[in-house]
Length: 342
Image 1 (cartoon, rainbow, N blue to C red):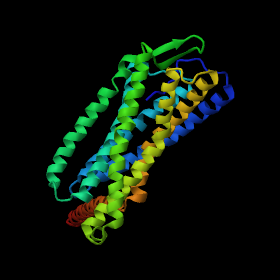
Image 2: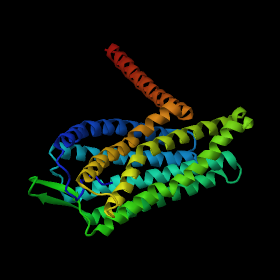
Image 3: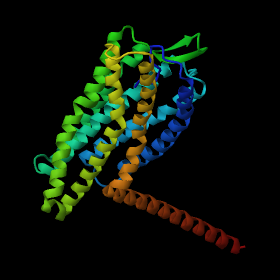
């Protein structure tokens, strides 16, 4: 995503800019801390669980991996903002960090779309496909999405560079398009792939999911239906939070496109877009740290799995401690016996 400032000159509103840049390091540090802890925890539960992963588990674990990669990149931007946007990590890292952030955006929305489709199929057509076969295809679909995310983020390699700005006296990791057509192309791609295509699909699936959850008595009584309904509620909440976090950014992309065609223009307007783009971008980043806590708060089925994993890990440690304790006791008794022979 675009974390550099816009190309156009902005109005001199230094107070507001100082406030935004002062808050950025602390805000991003909090996102990074909770995001790393939460997504690592989610991945550990999914990887260490004894039962076989469902299709939704596969999609959600890939979503957690994408979020973990993104929040792991934020410390570089924290250090950069603290150093007044002086980039100290070289041009390859400048490109790599922004590729990972772009991959997170595209992969997150596509994984969430797949989760909603899977929950829709699981609730409305539970007997159409075998679980194992669907899980096999899910791995292939996830691999395809990762490749697509990389390809869609490739422009960061060509247009991201470290440039020296004499007026500011810093070398910044800067996004510079060769001409304005690329900027418009970026806006259209982000809006189409990240919003215009997924939202109708997600809305259709969400409508039918809520309809089934409300009106199907059989679903509520059966044990299988209970598991599916819990998973469906979790998906709905995760999707709702994703839309709330990224909708402002989509609106800013649309307004930036209007500014490109000079439908609306002016110094104050450019300033509003600058500030709005910064705030909307970091609000979107916060989605990567919120998802793991939604699993714990809303996902009762996930909490049950987490408890099972912790019990198994603690039980294994107790057995290992017991074995080591018995071996030490045997060793001590052997030494004692040998010492009494003399």
